[in-house]
Amino acid sequence: MKDFDTLFFEYFNRKNDSNVVLTRKEFYNYTVQIATFSDRLSSLYPDQKEVAAQNKKQWLSENYEDYLQYKASQKK
Image (cartoon, rainbow, N blue to C red; front, side, top):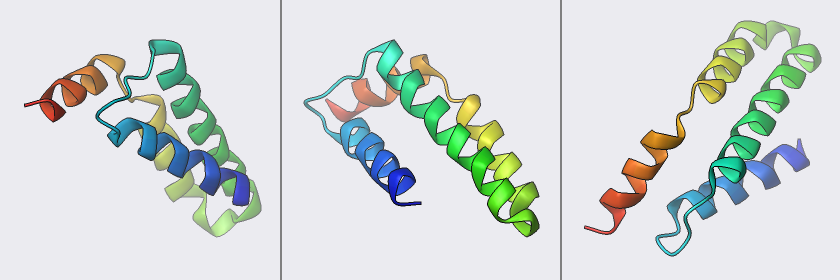
């Protein structure tokens, strides 16, 4: 769980830093790793399986182009 927290906060700090633009590879590396952690959590907490599956699906559906639009809106 500690590794997940570290990864999650690193991603959001970098995503929200107006001086940093993640490359496509970096962006998808973060989202896939976070989705993988969600999948692992479902095996650790079977009662949270449905929530973990939804989280995994959400993270895997993240779009780099949407991220770039978000970054452009930060500069306005």
